[in-house]
Image (tube, rainbow, N blue to C red; front, side, top):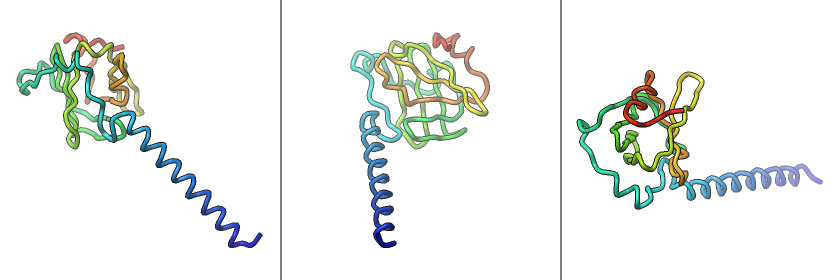
Length: 149
């Protein structure tokens, strides 16, 4: 086998690997709503979500967020919390509104330098969403009826 044939085989293998990686990445994003997107809530939960003014929320947390492949750091994400819903605002994305009835719990997530929250739902709609607040927010969320574990 000549050196050109060997180089061609290596190049072909690299191209096949890149094509497979792109294909799998695109399919995964289709299933989860797209890069930086989350699927819409089920109709029974969507009816419970209302557009609130900032002053209608009981708590505003600043921090960072990771939403389905998009990562933003402080101060480009904020979590607005009321007893009935949460709104996650990430500067480059559409706001994500979450009804309290949809959330089965908030699970703590640990990072190398901070702690965050993952939203658990029966549908798995928010599995790719994590909010990283600045400071400790677990007790404040629990007081508003959003239990963390």
